[in-house]
Amino acid sequence: MKDKKTQKFRQRLLEEYQKLIRSINRNRLAEEEIKLENTEDEGDLATISHNKELLYNLHESDFQRLKQIQEALKRMDRGEYGECMKCGVDINEKRLLAVPWATLCIQCQEEAECEGTVYQAPFELVRELKLAEEEE
Image (cartoon, rainbow, N blue to C red; front, side, top):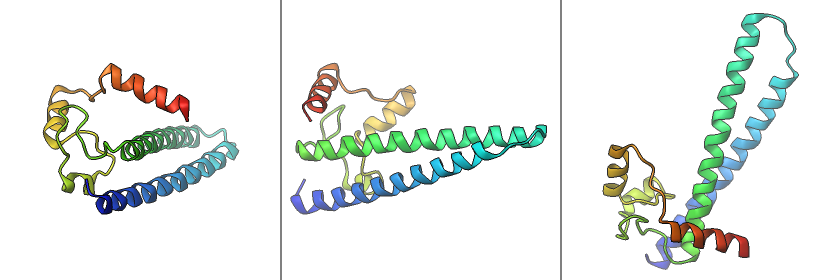
């Protein structure tokens, strides 16, 4: 991928990263407010429980997306951004515009969804990623 396009995607990923950090901070504040609520009413307790679960799910989703963005930025640094981790072909630019942290081309993504699986990188790649993280 050309340097200019890579920089455009890097900027987009960094913007998304900052947006997620703000979202996580807002969720933490909301969680603190929920903890301060004190009630004995069963309806209120059910609502509080539901809100806590909702915030937890949002929190987990945001953290998962942060991880995906961090991995995309590392792939950029290694010159591997935009390559499908399963088949090795270039991921279509339109797909990267829609999902800049994508790791699979559309065909491999569809296959993974049909199989009901999430693609896991080959063991060797996972090991290399862990080693690289430890070195940082």
